[in-house]
Length: 284
Image (cartoon, rainbow, N blue to C red):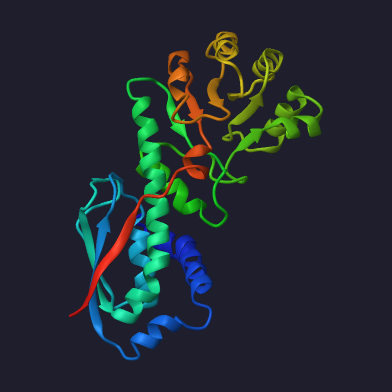
């Protein structure tokens, strides 16, 4: 995330909202023990192995509180870090370091956890044609951070939001009356540059989606054998995506299918945080 304009437009308001949630009127504990400005320094320590992500958000938390704070980093997003590794130092007004600590770590731990979990699954797909995608199953107001973390971990982003792409799911199809009608309406409404993806649950729906001219067909919650037959039916006439309860534990069974994409909500909704801390605060 090197684009400063993008960060200020999209990330900064969300970071400020998180800070306001944590500091409604004052940081009463910090103000009690540190009534006046005093410069200090604290270490950013990794407490478990993983893939680091969100360092720019971590730094931005302190910068928004006080633009004189200095964040010195020894690693970059995407680096594999080890337990006990010193990843950086934060220097500045101790009151700022204490008040921003929790929010900064919350972002960094969450984002690094997603990158680490994504990376562990992406490695299982190495050597295959299948690309690993995320979903819209993200934490409210955290999507920009969580989808970024998926990319850092070696995954790819599915559509960012409802304005970003057409995905006709079961209820859209129900509202339209059929897959054929839904695809026709979507193609008529949207720009010709937009691809139309259809979610299907059985082989009859696969056949209808192909005949309707879907660009991408999502095989949702199908058995391994049904997905294999569905891919044969599609026969390259549409891109294929596998979805539905895909996790690190079961993704290996999908690799032999040769599906183009596999999407997993678990990347963002079930990734454990990575243990990271700020330690050894001292006056300088």
